[in-house]
Length: 255
Image 1 (cartoon, rainbow, N blue to C red):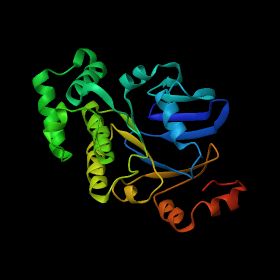
Image 2 (image 1 turned 30 degrees about the vertical axis):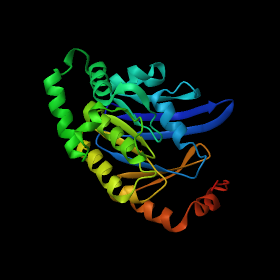
Image 3 (image 1 turned 180 degrees about the vertical axis):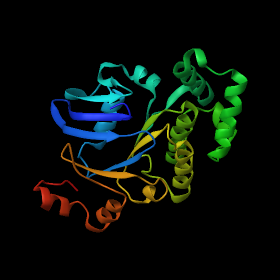
Image 4 (image 1 turned 90 degrees about the vertical axis):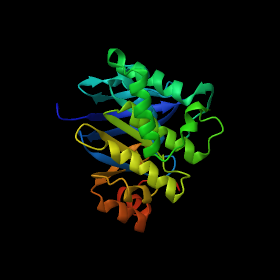
């Protein structure tokens, strides 16, 4: 198991007494990009929140192994320091905290004794801002406060570039993005791809997978991964939708 970056085993979870995840199994190796698709209500966002340790979700069974540890035993900040990152579907605003301060504090918390000097950090931050086609004026704005949807999503990717996680989950980061913003966001993600980074892209749409190429695609329905395949499965889903999976598995699919 040493070569497995993240391994999810028979994961069950609920929220407000409602069972949502009903036995999820998934393995993602270092350097791999996996996509997760499924109809509304299938449990995709729940899975991302459980991986990161959101307190509103109760894990009732199963394990999540990352770098040889069952991360269900760890607090969210401990998971982040271990190398996990979640790009939110709906990033929240934090009035009173500037982007620059937030990113420096986050970086220091992740790196600990290896933290960067202010000058080194600022140099890298400016390079990433330029790469993501973001104005340096963002640094003095309060985090996500008054940001457009596209600006919030770019900010998520900026955080990812600065924190350099070894495993990231993107929870429908592409939702609400126009084609230009989607291109920039994807460019930022692809900058991280390599043998030391793995990614789970949760999406409803094929278009982001034209920019971020998945090695594997999984379909989540009613709290379980019911089908997995290669990139060719993306086109099949686009053409047939989820009804054909329902017919094969006899499961009712929400639309």
